[in-house]
Length: 250
Image (cartoon, rainbow, N blue to C red; front, side, top):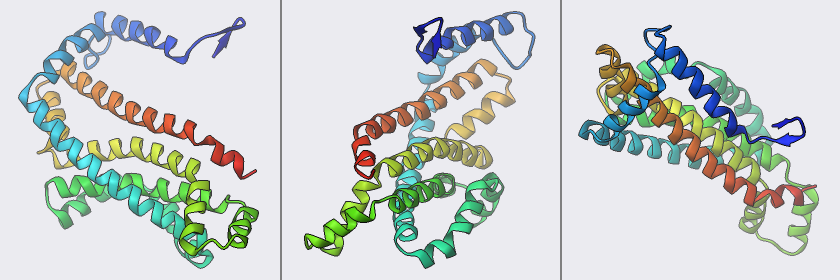
């Protein structure tokens, strides 16, 4: 962001939003919107409770398992679509449908199939994250230069070596898909646990909202936002380190 010729970091806008939040909360303009200072006090209370630590453990396990499955399956599916045109024609429409569909409506169906527990949340995270990873991997594979593949073949590259070259060439798009999948996966784990309502942060959200502990409620939301943005930033930094692969394709 550039103002009057000066480069202003994006994070500089954060104190402005905090002041607006504090102003609205102090004047009690909205009942469910406590002051930011109250949320910060509640934040220290939330993170030190045994119930939060147990909920964080369950949530982290469900999230990481679902995300790992989504990355593995999504990259493999994207490779298949990018390398095999008939598979792309068959699957592309369905993947786009799942990507744009309201997946939260499918959680009750998943609950019937997998029960009211951690497996349902893992599958929900998987469903939210896998499709964008598959589509971005497909885009990266299809953008691999044909001359790069021809050069690999001319040097006698085996099928596995050629696949490795294609994967490295598609790495910027794969990481972009994983970064988006990381954020969508957080949405999936929260929605899954809210609908199950008996495990993880979903149980805490229900507890705080039912007892009108809005400071604790918003503190939990901030923790989840920080978790999602932190993971996305880590993947984003990894993206910056492999940008030269994208340049090598041009």
